[in-house]
Amino acid sequence: MHGGRTAANHLLFLAQSQGLPRQRVGEVLDLVGLSDVAGRRAGTFSLGMSQRLGIAAAMLGDPRVLLLDEPVNGLDLRACCGSATCSSGWPGRAARSWSPAT
Image 1 (cartoon, rainbow, N blue to C red):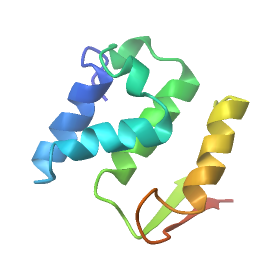
Image 2: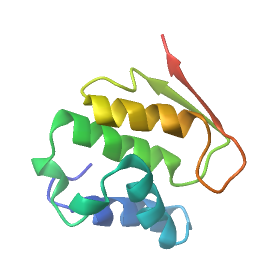
Image 3: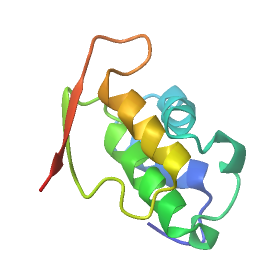
Image 4: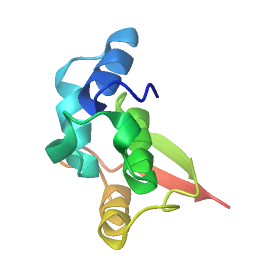
């Protein structure tokens, strides 16, 4: 992640490099709870916010399965609860699976 880019620009770069639609950026930012800081430089993020941005990046391609190593490391309680919500399925889509590596 380039610390000088905003969260939205970081994800937009990743989406464009993978041929994904621009709208996915907003969707994943909403999903991980970073919409309100989308215009903020990623280099100013806390550890938990950086973790959530990484999860958003991993979800850009709408994966059927997502394996995360220590997904709640550095996340606050609200974000951890959001991760539990994500584990039950992406909004408006068929259920997806993610599993923390141990």
